[in-house]
Amino acid sequence: MHNTIKERFDDRSDIYFKDIQTGLDIIEKNPENAFPLAVWDMVRQRFPDLRGKRVIVPSSGDSIMMFAFHLMGAKVTSCDLSDGQLNNGRKIAERYGWDIEFIRQDSMLLDRIPDGTYDLLYTSNGVHVWIHDLSGMYTNFHRVLKPGGCYIMEEIHPFLRPFDMGNDNLVIKRPYSETGPHPNEGVYTYAWRLQDFINNISGAGFRITRMEEFTPGTECWDPGFYDNIKEAEADSHRKYDWKLNPWAALPQWFGLVADK
Image (cartoon, rainbow, N blue to C red; front, side, top):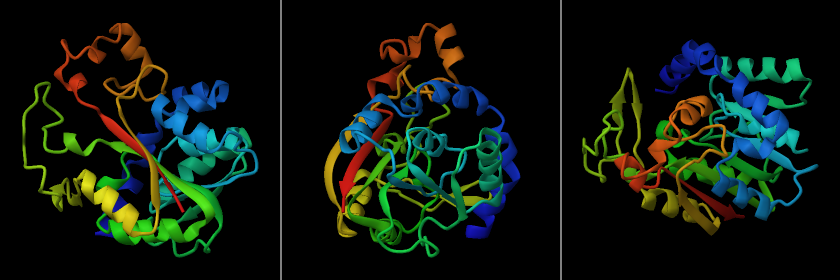
């Protein structure tokens, strides 16, 4: 299954990176705009100054977060299963002269990462749907952090997983309890519940100190209900009004801070 997922991302990596320039332009001016406001507040509260901090971003993919952390002065390691994703990320870093380490790694193992190395481990939206072993992954997240380090994450809200996300109306396609594996274009994906996140993070030895439920807003390069900021502006951000868009009545993402 891992090889199939790797091949999927290798084949589609150029497509994923095609429109990243807009995000790069935004974070060059304001690196904090890589993050939804609720998540940036968690990062800023935990790390008022990221200069010199060691940050690892597993399943970094086409995530712009690793570039933002670098621009804020952190020493960043980007990990991903896909060579295509890593190579595209490396090309961007080389073009801008950004000193970022790229390592091919399975996020559930991180077997090339030594114990107690990082101050912060960060995962962004879209990681967990590909993960079949939450317990193993969080155990290794805990292992590679320094004592006193922390894990910060953002992810699609589990309460949305039962819905047909391609439908403008709130249409249920499966029970919340059916976590998977679910067949998805030749691979399998997972729809973890909130209890799966909390229980496995705590079980790995973390102490969860903060959680937020939110919808990404216009302050973030990823504006949630829209494909890009220009599209949101052209629509006068109407999809943020739950009376016009029923999805806006529900939190779209959640994030948390977990200390080692």
